[in-house]
Length: 466
Image (cartoon, rainbow, N blue to C red; front, top):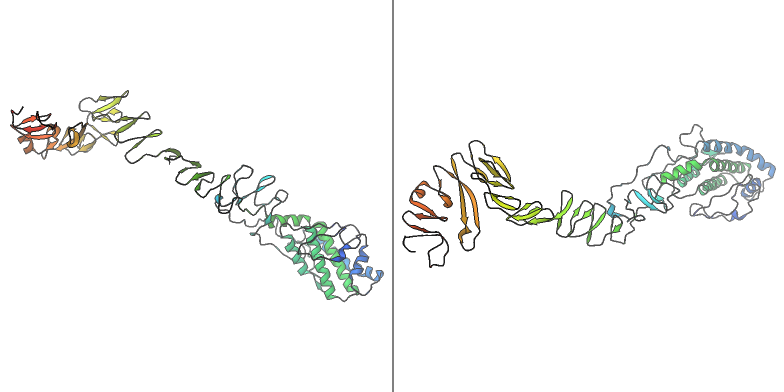
């Protein structure tokens, strides 16, 4: 780190040696007494040939022009890095939160935009120098170097003096101000040392011109040390961001809210760790066997099942008041938990009986249009006859449950023949219906099967067997 020099009246060097990084080479001359008068120090710096104090004072009078320029220029904001009203383009902030560090003292945050500091969460940009001790260089800031004097100042500070250009030293001074966590005192001294080196190269040792040139450099140094604090702070705010935004989680792990994700986890809305195989519902991780519907975790129903509150009704059951109950037979509705027949000519539809002339379509009582005929759960073509069929057993009469359904028989192509459903007019003329079987007229119907035979199904046979 750097240590700011303490400059007193009549002195040029700091009171104690400064510790420097690479921008300022070590100088054994800094160990000399800080009480050495400015004139004697400068005389000592004028190389091998001795210069009298009287001659040196004359040279310094000439050098005061440089001091005046330096003071006036720095008063405008020495080497201002950029117009203070402008902010450099911030780095890309679209990184997903899972890619960076975890919680800050138990509080989740987005490390692409925020930093966890000893004083709590701080924005990455603009940087608060007092609250961001771990600030780093902002790669999005290109820096600003304008040479000697204030950028845009109404007083022009010369870039050269006594035929010596100070411009390289001023550019280095600007770059030093634009280096995050640099110290103003070290930047100012770096500039002065480079100006002195330029004077020594241009003017022979022991000449008054060298003394005047180096005296002008002292004037520039006094200008920036006195008036450069505000421009230096402004440059640091642009050159730094509060932190690097690196992850605090172990290598290979991402952050989710305040928790580092395990290899078998994913993140719900950047807040909650959730094991693979489980579903996210917003920031909530649903339990096993649940899925997200309408923003809430609910039990996952299989194909053919119907959701009923927190459970699923199997096929053949209906949800009534968040309870799964067996479906009522066709033509009945459940009233107070009991299946009740609808009046003749009306069909049950959910928990109600449809008015006469309406069908139950998609769970709602619906009037049929354009002359079509309401028949159970649909509309049959105009002129049809609605046939209620009570069917026993789907081909097996043993222990079979009774099922009912409707069929629209379209006259004159088909007619309703009881539980045998729609048949042609010729079939209706030649047969009767026995259970769900057509029996030729003249034969006998045995609804429970032939006595003594194992089949319990309805049987048509010649009469007199029983």
